[in-house]
Image (cartoon, rainbow, N blue to C red; front, side, top):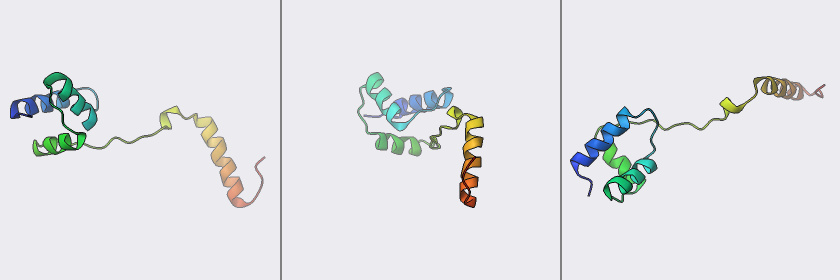
Length: 87
């Protein structure tokens, strides 16, 4: 059972952490540290009731893109949109 003390400890840990936590990761930590098995959805409900707000992280590959290759491909795409063959 998730007690108010455990919930407060989780909220404190999440707020002070230098990383982003998912509800699934918090549920796994609850199972490991306290032996409490909750679904990620249920964890979200408890965190929302406790006033902990979160923002969903976005998935992006921009940090892995080569800017020169992207610029060249964009130029080719613009050329194709105009109806010409890229050179």
